Length: 484
Ligand code: NAD
Image (cartoon, rainbow, N blue to C red; front, side):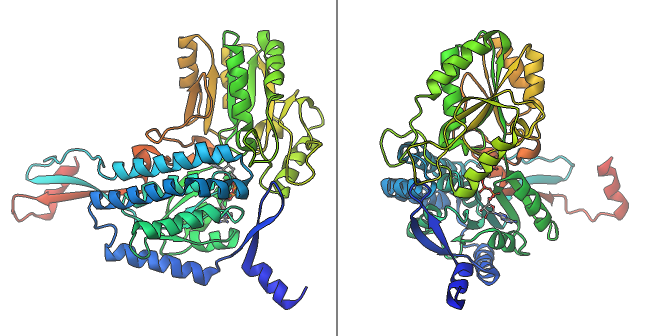
């Protein structure tokens, strides 16, 4: 390798189309000096008040304009997202990007509806006022599975609340976030309010350990979250973590089995299973196990795997060769299992990181296949006998992001929804989210919420302003009575 080539590999990264393996672009890795420049600009912008001191209505107007620009560029962004991630074009065009537009519009509106408790005289002679202030300069680190949507989930509330932001997309899928940054410029955000830095772990480390970053919002693997927690600890940053998942999908004997099987196929294979809420543990009541398996196999066989750009394609490739290798290694280590379907690369597709939709039988509850996030199109089909057992098995993982329960018995559904320790529980569906409602985990799936007014609150700090109305000169002993 020549010196020039070596230099190139450390400063720029090839961005690959996972369906064709072609190089789409070369994107530089920001070094710590570039990260420092971005954070300094964000800090300066925050302290200038150019953004945080705007009225909520003014901030909302800029975010609305930004959302309009994303919508205007929807086709182009969807094609770019599909080429960079390998997801079916229809998923990007009809799902991710319109949803991101809606998320931005929601936060533009929510900026004007910040809630707090009423100002009161809790202590005689004093008025207490509650403010929700922006946190300051926030670092946003996003994953590769829904690049533009994850950027919107983070930038929307962070900016609506008056913070300034530096966002680092995944090194595998930076293209649409870079475009989002350009559109932010066009929308009229003041200088330094939104900055995109590109690169991988090293860039992320520089950003998340930077002393002038006040808060980190991270979406990604639980193991990366643990590292970021350590990196953030020296300067005691606020953290907002959306981490991994291992969603249970519980089918009771009284469920509509066809609807449940279709839900399982969508839940397990959407985005080639590279979804933190993917239905990866299908717990099915013993009395209907065989019947449900047959319907599931029939429905899963209809999933069309192939070129993401084609209108009929339901499932594209995995993000990269390493990710497919990771999935294959999980399966090859699980010697005890059988396959209801899949388990290998599709025969006809020579290029691209494809893997068949896979349903595994015979995995045991404490095996890594059931306990760990595989992040590929692999679901385990597992039997249970009683409601209590279904709940116990569902909760028996370190994660707690999302899960679903399938039954026609309302009481059973609500009992399960209460007992499942997951941030979202669907009844007779699996996957849908909405801008108005929170998404976020229990346990090792993280803390803090995306979307909804709760996300907006997460990007603020509550401040108590206490005003003495009496004008009385107070003695030191005087204050102790108020703590009683
Ligand atoms: P990842 O953890 O490998 O990477 C995520 C981001 O972190 C990337 O931008 C990466 O460059 C950066 N990064 C890596 N090491 C870092 C470090 N030491 N310091 C700072 N930044 C660092 O995750 P991924 O593989 O891109 O995404 C898949 C994961 O994301 C899965 O675990 C999935 O469950 C999770 N995810 C969770 C949600 C949710 O809402 N909970 C949503 C989407 C994805």
